[in-house]
Image (cartoon, rainbow, N blue to C red; front, side, top):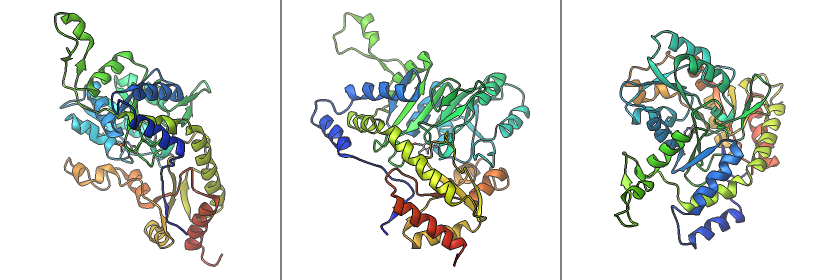
Length: 386
Ligand SMILES: Cc1ncc(COP(=O)(O)O)c(C=O)c1O
């Protein structure tokens, strides 16, 4: 069997054509593909505004800047995420406080967040960064209520979840990143994600003022409309109004993202088929200690199971040419965050989850035969001879 990774991109001839068309055009960056991609993404996600960014990490950084994170500002996030969800607070010199996870959903536990908030006077914390981890949507309606009580903003890290949703108290589907409950949401277009652009990211929002701030921050804080006030200057005139950055996506990346976006629904359908197959294959297996089973609302960036002897299984799968992965080593146990006093035992649910979790191959081009092989290799490890 050929090497089976845990995730991989799916590039078609149409994708390649879309990129080469831009490469043959006049504008490799700051051209028309950016707005086209942003508008199509807003439509897909169901939000008002989208801002294309060079990657998901830079998107988080700009969101934290736009929401005023700075020295002394405290932000709560989950330890079971990629480090960027927390690092964006540190880029702005703010303080990261990790809540524990819900052992059933693997998401930031709202009760843990409540406990943290209740332990200090109101005003101690400034924002929340919940993560739609693995593709499972956070119940942002509940988080909004809590955030309003404590005057907090919310950045939804939806990197794993374009197309995921939760059902609100009215019975309506609320799609990840739609801006209904969170001030800002971010996505990544790293190749293992649903939509690949090589590198790339997107910020979504329904807030016009934040949208305009983000456009400025993306390009050096430059505002060209101020040129109107300086009619004595020439057409070259622009002003740097604030300290901004270069966090732009190129046009050929936007073209790839746009082409991939057209297949997003088909990719999601295939991911759900794969998830349903894993769920039914493992339904009666006593070695499975936890999993999401199958949920229609899940975007299935990852399909995670929890097992005993996780390291043994991981190594066994490698001998079978299957490259499963672990998501994630808890952020609070990273040497960088230990410097702030975080240690083993601080977040027991996250740490227990980490000791048992393993992400199985999940990507649209995984074949039926490959998935059957993955399942049989896992079963034969725990139930030899069965
Ligand atoms: C949950 C989460 N947040 C943020 C990021 C950062 O995105 P990028 O790799 O595009 O910078 C990632 C990417 O791996 C992620 O998984």
